[in-house]
Image 1 (cartoon, rainbow, N blue to C red):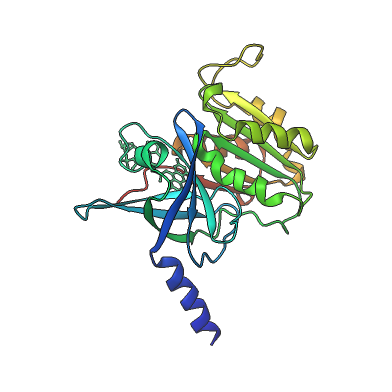
Image 2 (cartoon, rainbow, N blue to C red; image 1 turned 135 degrees about the vertical axis):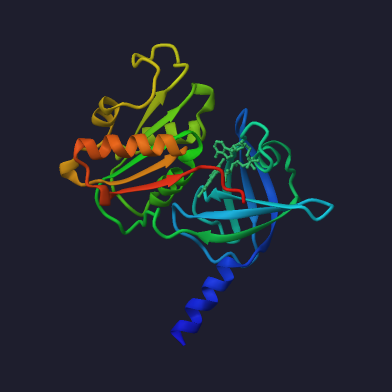
Length: 253
Ligand SMILES: Cc1cc2nc3c(=O)[nH]c(=O)nc-3n(C[C@H](O)[C@H](O)[C@H](O)COP(=O)(O)OP(=O)(O)OC[C@H]3O[C@@H](n4cnc5c(N)ncnc54)[C@H](O)[C@@H]3O)c2cc1C
């Protein structure tokens, strides 16, 4: 019986479900949040992702993975898509998709890169670019349920690329147990004292937790970013088993 229930759940998660785009909200000039309505959505954990499939009039199909950006609101889920230049799926979703558009989704997918509100202890989140999406889901999932102290280190090219900018700043101001540090790799805002450049050991020491506190650590972004940050953290003495990573490489077939 239990086995049938588990395999029934797995089959449902692997099946494509129709989804309707309810709203598309620009986050930056090149990234949008999409609210999708999926009848019978089973719920998900912070850090999981979905596959989104588009079908053209001639039957051509393309699917890509996108992280869930926050807890579900009934049958409504949110993803945030960063446009990749000349990208087949991201340019449509981030720029052109209009309310009422139909897509298909499959999921939720993934059980490793997740944070649960019952997980106690300090959390370090390290994001590169759109890698902030599943980490934002963790910050939102924590709301009013957990008092686990969170630190987010968020690296991007320039201030104009900050996704969830206002919400992150508001949350950090309202909640003393959430700190946010921005790292700029190409252009910094006026008054920023840190020189532009990729994330360094000093950034992780200044804005993260010490290894002795054994923080749960989540690193997400482009493959090179994730590998470099993980190496730096291990070099600082963080236990590899405490570092969970998600690589946002190309996800098409
Ligand atoms: C588990 C997972 C979760 C993801 N979550 C998100 C998310 O929340 N938000 C988000 O915006 N993206 C996310 N991605 C990336 C996303 O799945 C697509 O790869 C991305 O949107 C590009 O798809 P595309 O069809 O536009 O580009 P494609 O047409 O597939 O590729 C166009 C060109 O861009 C390159 N390219 C493709 N993907 C990337 C990439 N991610 N980075 C750099 N170059 C790339 C290709 O090699 C190719 O040269 C996630 C990927 C994975 C594996």
